[in-house]
Image (cartoon, rainbow over all chains, first blue to last red; front, side, top):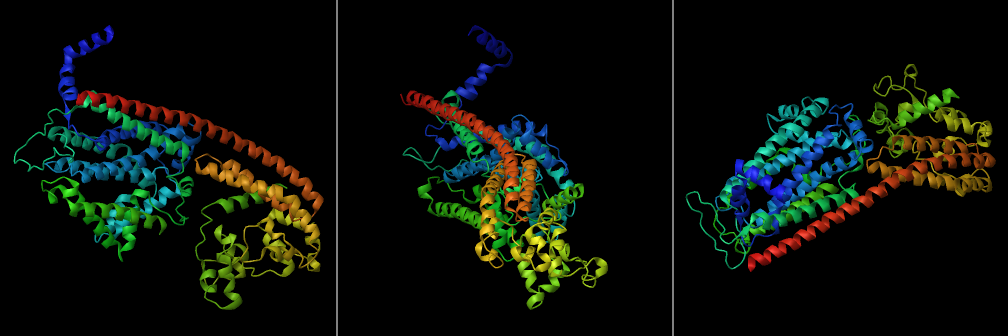
Amino acid sequence: MQPVKWLVDFIDVRLGVREIYASELKGYLLPPKVNVWYTLGAVLIALFKLQIITGILLLMFYVPDAEKAFASIQYIMNEVPYGWLFRMLHAVGANVIVIALLLHMLSVLFMAGYKGRREFTWLSGFIIFNLTMGLCLTGYLLPWSQLSFWATTVATDAAGAIPVAGEFLVEFLRGGATVGNQTLGRFFALHVVGMPLLLLGLIAVHLFCVKRRGVSSPPFGKEYRASEPQPFFEYEKHQGGIPFFPNYVVKDAAVICFFIAFLLAIIFYAPGMFFPESAFQPADPFLTPPHIKPEWYFLWAYQTLKIFPSEIIGLGVQGLFMTFLALLPFIDCGPERRPAQRPLFMTCYVLGILGFVAISIWGHYS
Amino acid sequence: MSCVVFRSVVLVILLWCPVVAFAADTVCVECHSGQPGALGEPVAAWRSSVHAAKGISCHDCHGGDPTNFALAMSPERGFIGAPEYDAVPAFCGRCHVGVLDAYLPGMHGQALDAGGAQCVICHGSHSVQKAGLELINENDCSRCHDYDRALEIKESLTGVDTRIKAMDHDLERLHRLGFATDSLASGLFNLRNQFHRIFHGVDVERVRQESGGVQTELDQLASAVEVIDDTLAQRKLWGSIVIALFVLAGVVLVLVRKTYEEEEQG
């Protein structure tokens, strides 16, 4: 024990870490009624860290060249010690991140956590969500399988429906008329450098917003009172709340453990869940596989484009929906946060989830 | 022999090469699909065939230029049209080299000039499907002769055929898990071809002898699959332990949180 105390003293004298611990960890209080949904932020940070670690390991062996990319993935899966595990953690982990992100967003919407001058928190989170989708899309091409190639062809084709700039946009995304080596190069650069850097910055902004404004109390129980936000900056204090460390951190850690167990369970018991047959065939620009479909989280967008008579209407509807979601805190700005007291919102909420699931299933079977 | 091997390799590459597997509509298909009767029927039959699925189109068998309406049926572009009855084995045998080699010295091949069975009698022509033992059946065989001998051959082939199908299924399963099964699949493909060649000689004794060789090679493939399955079982075992540890850690942390909750309420 003595050496540990000596080490802490050594650092404390130089950096004042005990003061940071007292004010930012032990003294950082969360709402007394904070529930399990509040752990999803920590779960996402843990999963993103896992993506970075496994991504770096994959980078050691992956070759971003159309001639070699598929073979390098085969090499990782079959020859590199534990390469299959890193690759599966990375690929399946991306899907689990999307699940956690959706749950995080849905819980914030349900409890109206974006209210009370938390527009920046919501907006930064919304951009993180879209950036994660971008990371998934760019990462999808990298194995250079039939699935990668054709899903990217379909996804980039959709941009062509935009009037005037459509053709230019498609060529800009692909780096040429068709998906090829140049597309792989730019998607690789975006996936491993551009987007992760942006994501790290945005996560920092998001956490700053959460910390600076204070965590919102769950809108449940007799103690809850709907209050009008003040016209000046105000930190939401939680007197008598739960200390962040160690009291709440153990709950974060427990849910992180359960999520990692869930991720590992997919890898070991249902490894093919997110990989159709075309994911194991090398890309072939001359052979269009039948029934090529995007990943499950893009199925709603894929099907929306097919529902409407023209793709531009489908894109317009998607754009309107996403803009509405992004600007929700500016539209739904009343003080009431209790779900039972917001019948119109809750109807839209439930119908929205059912619509997302129904259109995705439709997209899967269409 | 080396020529046969070379042609077999070329055939394997052609069948598996996805570039060639792209069966776009050729001028043959465009023109014939609109024609009535015997001129148009082959197109519909071909579309549902194993040839269409593998990208083998009209010109691959009949020759001609599939990109030019005017030269589509030009002998200068290699158009040979439909073969005569006794020329069918040589016609199909340009690709199915090993099968032709087995067929010619066999009873069917030896009886060809006298109207003996050739390829399309059993397999059909444009609607040809992936060949299987179901092609040997009483209805079809007894059109020309007694079924007894054919049944004897079929029975001696059934065990191997079942194993080949099971192996194919196993390799597909492992491929879907990301294992590099290309060399094993290629071995099985060659073995299946070797096996298919055997019974085209319709010689019961030879079938029995050579089936043994195929069984031995299947045993080797089965050993390789077993090694991969053992690896998978090991992974699953260690994976289960790690999952259990994470669940346990989660439960312990939940219990620790409960103690904090009691402190907070007290």
